Length: 177
Image (cartoon, rainbow, N blue to C red; front, side):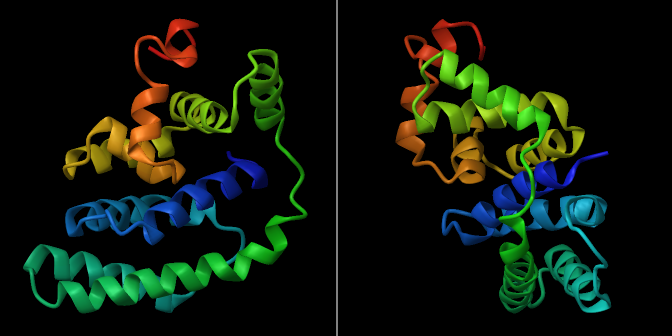
């Protein structure tokens, strides 16, 4: 079970995906399919019937290739609206023990902000099955691992590539393979 801070982190990854213009229709379909299984796990409170209907409509449009663009716009609008309703309350959510541990290790290793963001994603990928399945779904929809990391974190792909090179601190320290 995810605590509220970890749910917030997953919602931020989702927010990054929805707002990134590099997302393809196949990737949006992958996100939509993932949300079908995980929406209730990452949001606090009740999910409206309208939200479920928008998800169903987009999934259906993706399968039939009919009205995909229109349904995709509705899907993005609904999810953005849902995320916006939670944005104000997210500031008061206390930091999770996992986040505290990540921050402590990042400080000890003297990671800059980009390294910390990538390291944080890598840790959560290993711990949260839901995030692992989202990552895998995006990969199956045509996203390379570097692109998927870039999309989830909101970091430029060039930065992600540099930070995950063999000579980078994250990889040379053995924290990320």
